[in-house]
Length: 311
Image 1: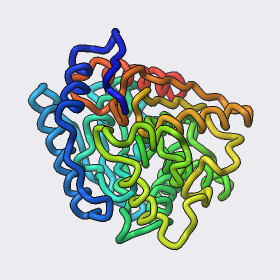
Image 2: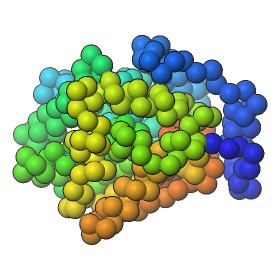
Image 3: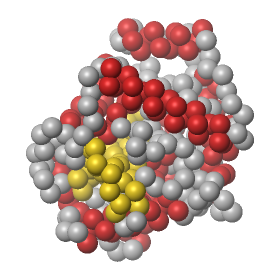
C-alpha cells in the first residue's frame, strides 16, 4: 500500500494516520504466532473501546446465549422497529476478535439505522476450525426464526472475515431451504481464502493491521484439512445467485479490495443487487476507526441501507 500519494480530499485525521504509518511502520509478529496476533487484535480492540469511551460513547449491551452460542445485544437509544434485528459477525481472520470487545462499529450502525444489533461470538480457529464458526452462526439464526423473528426483518453486518462468514451463512441457509435475511452490509469482506486477488499482494506490506502472509496463515488455521477454495470457506467461488441486496464497502488501500470488487461483480453477473462503494485513500476496516470522518460517513451510509430494507 503506497502512501506517497494521498487523495486531496482526505480528512486531516486520515492523512495524519497514513503519514504516521509510512514514517513508523507497525512491527509485525510472525504469521505463525497466532496466539500473539490474537492478543494483539484483542489489545487493539480494547484500546479502541477506551477511545470511544473517552469520546463520550456509552454502550448499552446485554450478553445472552442463543442456541448455546454467546451473543451480545447492542441497543441504540431509539429503536425504530422492535421486531427487526441486525446480526453482526466480527472480523479477525477467524482466529481473533470477540463480540465483547468489537463494539464501536456495531454500536455506530445500531444508532445509524435505529435497530438493535446482535453480535455473535462464534468459535475461533485453530481450536475450533471450520465448520465451527459457520455452525454457530447458522444455529443462532435458526433459533431467532424459532423465536418468531421474520427473515424479512433480519439484516446482516459483517466486516473482514465476518463479511465472508455472512455470505457463507446465507449460502448455507439457502442449502438448508431456510429463509434468508433481507439485506447484507459487507465491509472489506474476506471472501477468498486463497488470496487470489491483486490487492492482498500489492497493499499488504504496510496495511494498518496485517499482511497477506498473516491472512494466509489464518486461512489455513480456519480451513483445517479443507481446501481454501471450498465455497463454504471462500464464498466467492460459490453460486452467488439469489442473494439478498448487498452493500459492499472497501477502501482504495484495503488489503482485501480485490475481494470486495470481485464479489460485487460476480453477484451482479448472477442478477443480484449490489451497491459497491470504494472509499478513496481508506484502509482495511477503516469503518471502525473512532472519530474518523470517513468512517462516520460510511457508517451513516450503512445505517441508511439497512433502514431502507428493514424498517
